[in-house]
Length: 174
Ligand code: ADP
Image 1 (cartoon, rainbow, N blue to C red):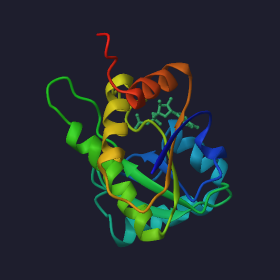
Image 2: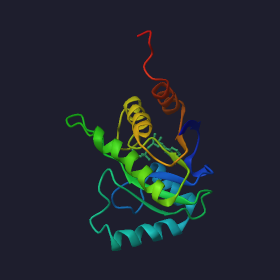
Image 3: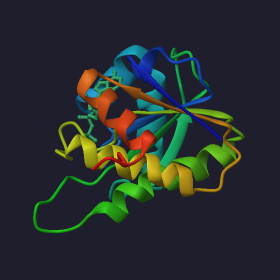
């Protein structure tokens, strides 16, 4: 499996599947979620509403993932996952790791070979970027999957630098 880091906008990625940092309502929000629905058009939201009605009446649980088609995005599918809100008092790392594992499991089911991830939970949900990056990189490295390219698409220099450090691993001089 190849891990690539890209600075940019996840809605512009030509990959089989893009992962959305959704919220449990599946009905849209800000950040990546807003960008995906804006650029992808109304078909994605229509499928999300159907999933809500048929399977996730109480919302998609945190740490889980579900796929829709990708509307007008240059991808085939959107995999919606719900990251945990960061907490100072409770360790929710396992839930964040689960987002990456479950998204890759759904990608495998779809037969997706290339998958683009944003920094799940590192925006509105408040996860410190360095830790979010370490969890993301470690989890995809430890997951067995038929996906051959994982592309982390980072919005901004801080996110890119954090993922770059996570991919390189701890600095041996420190
Ligand atoms: P969450 O609610 O899970 O924290 P957000 O969407 O608020 O999700 O943010 C997750 C990360 O995605 C943040 O680092 C944010 O800067 C970044 N982001 C926002 N828009 C985009 C985009 N279009 N492409 C890639 N990353 C984005």
